Image (cartoon, rainbow, N blue to C red):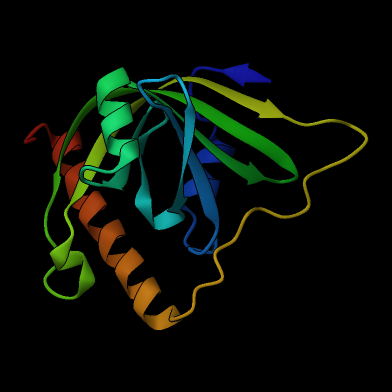
Length: 167
């Protein structure tokens, strides 16, 4: 199944607070040599603005940020209800994500990539299903979950600016 927008099910899956924040989503980009690169994101680092618009938090200067800003293209991959979902994306801009008040994130800069959904593909077969998504087994759950929640709050603030036209 393919489409050009995220379905209501996919939006619910990406945004549901009941979903584990420790599920890993894969952000794929291509470097200058044409080599595919993968970044692991938590659900907290992906914010759905609309069925055709996402915000994604990446480290400034990372390979992912550099590749996506240069090429303008990325793919987000995740697993939902036994199927593999991949969204082809086009970069519509990026901006620094406001700094965290303290801790490790205050020392490293994040960027919010504005990504438009170009195509969504759901891969599933009738004879089998994917039984488990990739998951982070975090070593310091309180610290990491707090960090991810902070990133999610900051992405939400950027999304509000996009929605009301102030940014």
